[in-house]
Amino acid sequence: MCWSLSNCSRAGAAIQLETEETAAIIAVTQGFLAALSTKSRADFEKHCIRAGGMTLLPPSPTSLRFCTIDSFVEHVAGLKYDTDERIWDPEVKVHDIGALNLAAVWAPFRSKINGVVDHVGVELLSCINLTANGR
Image (cartoon, rainbow, N blue to C red; front, side, top):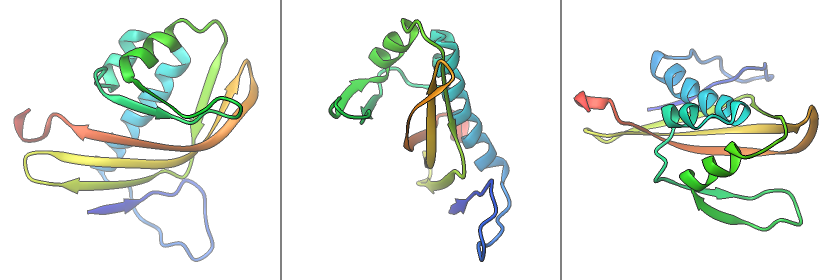
C-alpha cells in the first residue's frame, strides 16, 4: 500500500485522502518533532526506540554522522537554545509484511533555532508498528 499526503495544493496532483493508518504515522512523526522542541526524554520515549540508529547530515562544515537515537536524545536534552523543526507535504509509504508493518515518511523540513531559520532539508523517517497483530 502507498499513500501520498499533500498539505498544499499542486497543479495536476491527485487528491488522496488521509487514512487512519497514515494519520497515526504522521502523528508519530509530529510527536518526534515536538520532542525536539520540548527536549524531553519522556516525550522521545513515546515515539522512538532509543536503541535505534540515526544518520544526520547537518549543514556545512559539519560532516555526516551516525549515532544511536539514545545518544541523539541525550544531546538534544542538554541543548540550551529553543528549537522548532517543522515538516510539510509529507509522503507516507507503508509496507505490510504480515506480522510487521513498516512505514517511511519523507518530508521537506525547516529548523529554527531561537526563532531564526538555521537549516532546511528533507526528513526521512523509518517507522515500525509495534502494536500490529497484538504486539
